[in-house]
Image (cartoon, rainbow, N blue to C red; front, top):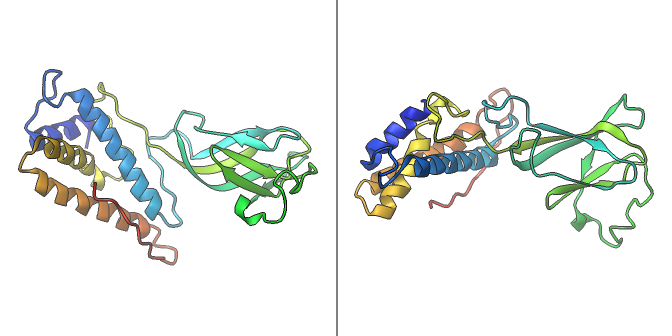
Length: 236
């Protein structure tokens, strides 16, 4: 479904026009469609199994690289190389001091380091073994005692590529079977705010889609053993 078709479906659901004088102008519709994309990704990521989720419109894989700096323990991040916000990290690797071997680091959390000050834990620089995710950064233990260009590799989940008001033929980078959801969710919230009678049916459709999204991603990797996940969602 192209973006023009998504807007057309919203228009039919809400009885509005895609003009700046409409009670639901295209700029507002675009914001709400992008919010629906955010909701879609949150459900998908929470439900995913061993096949990680990503927007198929992305031009690269969800892997962020950075350089290791000798004696620097913390490495901040907020976005990937193309400006997509990083939502989650599920694997971290580094290069060794020779730059020829890649090594996977083990995750650790501050809550596990009892009886020792964080500044004292593995305080002597060396080859990192652990990483701790804190706020918008990683802390490596120990800090590296060497520098390495592109020596840090982070595997992550990230936000989608968004629509703009000028898009027409662009399609969302999610499975086509769920494109209708991007029209249903904005339509429901508009009709709810305006007290329109179709809001009730749109709400039911929206919740059905969200259940199907979670179910789809929890079962997508059929070549691996299935683990059922219970994902609790706020209906609003």
